[in-house]
Length: 595
Image (cartoon, rainbow, N blue to C red):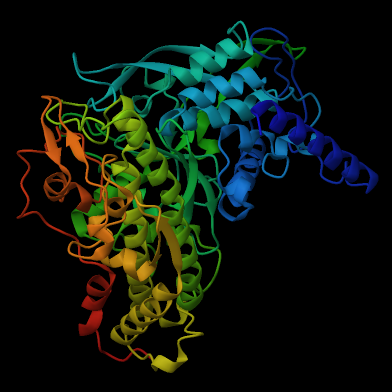
């Protein structure tokens, strides 16, 4: 189906949905949380509303709906790219006239959606989402441009950056011009602005308080080059995100990303500047404000000050908590002593009085399988790309253009970054189990043992053993298929993937058998088409040798910013994280009865 047909069909469904709602008397059932109150017809689009905390909640509701459909909807919804997100009325609540509200602007033109799709990546996605919402709801919006604070250093990795201008919906000549400039000019380096740095009041985001009133869907998370949009907070205090890949296909995918909530620089880490580096972590958009005359006519759009942003959740507590964690190795939170910021966030954000590990592990296995099953289509597309157009050069010794940041075909078809995310998603299950075990030791009644009765749990060691046993029961029951280079379907269970976790190749030159970690010496691997991995010098490294030399990168739990190597890469002596059974099994010492 072409984009235009998809758009027209979706629009028709949206009109039908609106008609049905009107016939059912639902059109006025929910009042607009922020009715039009101002006016401006200049710039990229008409402005009818100010940003308010109620509007921020409305924005979060809109984004959470997209996440819910992306994570749990139809096949088309789960694989939807930007056009699909925006033109499906079941995903995009702004296609509902009631949710859009009076004075809203029409759907973004097809040409602008296509332009944004063509350039979007994880950072630009975080810039596009609030800009689109602001456009549809007739709100002001701004995006900043930044310059590196270190001469000659890429703004993606510089120690800090400085705002030097930007795009405003009030002064941009058209919708197309604004989105091209505001989204196209946004990069992960936009987040790297120190709180007390030069022009800091022009930054796009600010750190947000860790509570349910402030940390809403639509907030962002930035971790050293990786950018996500918070999309859902579960009753257990789990954070879920939407992310956009940098591949040519511009995939948008959902996952539980609590593993990415880290890296906050403690306040005072730099003795010369207490806020140096305090830009990573969870962030709230610095919502702009329209200044008006007494009649409500917009005269100017500007950034809110830090003080004005406090009602939207601005707080520096993340960095102060990180400071406390670095000093004490725990955070005091009432009767609890969380051992990490992850645990603190769960405590702060949960709405339930108890957690249920049995139900959580069952549900998470489905989510984990989906994350790996989604990888298969990309593996197949990359394999076809290499077969059609030849091998792709490994960015060996290319400075900043390492395996995680290189441009061109390598960026489009390799998978080191998304493989890091999936490994972290696997390890999040282990981390969550440890969270449940720690909480059981602090407050046994917080942990609902329903479903685990057969294990006769009395201690933290008993709970650890029960959770491992449940994982080992469920993993073999969850299965997917991949297609080999010879066209043969191979079944993989989560248990198989767990065994191969450090053998899933990110190298796009490798056939699907190696991308899925087929064990050496097996018939599955022996049947793989032989390939090579070229390097910039022109040398072509044979498949099995390249696979051996890439072992370190297949074990990483985070992206690297340093130069990548292949032919001279070390192949032993590096740390490898214990898998789930070994990690959670370390609680076997905690045998003191608690109940």
